[in-house]
Image (cartoon, rainbow, N blue to C red; front, side, top):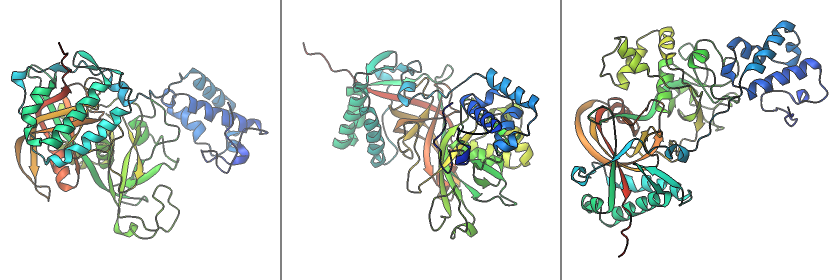
Length: 464
């Protein structure tokens, strides 16, 4: 194992004099084991073994460990299989997405009417086109049972943007002439896609633990590997305790989970914490005043599969089968923290957060800003990511205070810019609603069947 460069802090809080070199045997063994554990899959080792090394504050303290315990740790490290996260790019996910699409016959085309102000559409389209233009135009892309080149996707976005700029009112007439239409095969005989919503959540939180704020949000651990500690190990067994990874503290485990399922959001700090900082706070931006609201973004997950807490509660008869995300949250918050943790441990997946500048927008899997009402999250294993889509479903309508008024059918154009752990198969899709009380109410109440169509520019006709 090579040594990290000596310095005040070698990246893990280890003083410079502990860098590899002329060191006592106990210090060398301590450093070896830490590096070995970092190189292996942490989740492949018993929790006691993992914590035995990382909980020792110094090599000097490590020398007090019984010889038998050291031997057991060495054996466990040697037996653990090295695993590194699969760094699949968004494009590589898109390359395997042909099986979830089928061609739509012209007589079954939707009307291509858009219920939103079309001014929000060009920005979402242009950012996705910019993403595609960084891809080699000759890259083959499976799309609805055929293989097209990336340049065909690029041309699809360019032509649609041209039509949108020239005469948006004529889109319903021009699209059938110039584009091929595909649809998600959906689920069951009906081929329906179940539409849900997501948004930038806001929860009350504190930058310091207090009597009411006792449940931590963690930032990305420096030794994150896939798979990493499970939710049960983190929440119930304290796998990350004492590592100074707490970004903030929430009022309940359910609210931490709620923020994780949305992927990004805002922390509303108590008024007393919106004034000047009184101590060094590495987890917060370096401002002379701490804002009353702090934005947090997704910073990675532990590599475990997503398991639906909602579905488990339905199967156990705890909530009705048609319960929305908001109703699931309310049920969880009605339980004690210990019960919340036990229920949430059903889902081993765990997400980490990072702080973000307040003026930076939330981004999706493609790394592009999400557009409220336009950005779509899908399962990129079966549906194309970075594609021009068209939605047909039912939406909730709320007022500015978040009171639900009615539901109504809607159709609109969108772009598949994001993915989600809960989205499995061609029968699930998620629509991004933005931020605020109304967005939360409408996204939380969205659980309706519908359709998801995809547009692809028709091939140029060969001249005779």
